[in-house]
Length: 320
Image (spheres, rainbow, N blue to C red):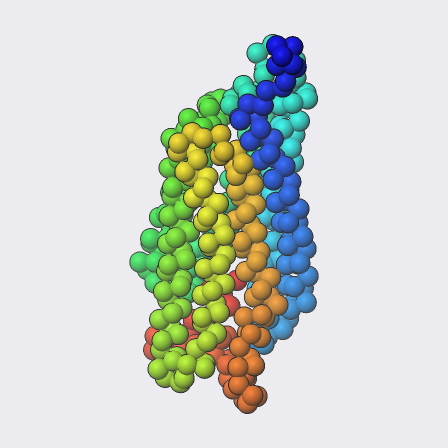
């Protein structure tokens, strides 16, 4: 029995969760790659089509293509850096005195540049994705000053905190001991909640005005738009919240979400882009009435609706 116990390998939870996290990161990156391809195809197919037909205009096409390509390249490089450091943990640095897998995982910023590169690249990716959320929110609220101030302040705070994390990382700090990282995660959750609440509230208020002015039939498109936004935000918020809790209590399970957290946010936003580029939110309600004129008017309302004394709000701009 004693000899059998000696031959039984031990699997520290830290190493197990870090390795499982890298496997999940690879799986998530595969999904992200497929959705990126779908997004590019959907945008290209809708290129040059007038927005009231439920497609994207040329300007939106170029902006969305740039966003999709840039964020994908950043995500790909970040994934490659994570994969390289995972190789360093169990292969390249194996057997060197004082460089056990547990120490390499805990002191990721001390032993190599791959961890630093991944942190910096994925931070830039988060900045770009959050900038898109900022743009959507501001456009939805017709550039209201208080919305610009509120969302811009939170956004700049996120950029400042993530930059501080990278600065401390260069000083070879232990990632899990950085209080700034905990503040960054908390603010990131708050930012997504604010965005979802503000955009949903504005669109629902427009829905009520349309319902009272015309009929409930014409207002159904806004329910679809809110559903798209909430579904996307909920997907990322759940993972972000789980990561925040595990990080706050210093649980090893944080490594299950750490590596793929940014990619999950990218997936959530790609789902919106694909659905809008394909015009599904318009198509779902174009057949509500058998009267073809209702469908035409309905699509026109979905594209541009007067909210405040002639100030137009674009439903497509608020979710694209």
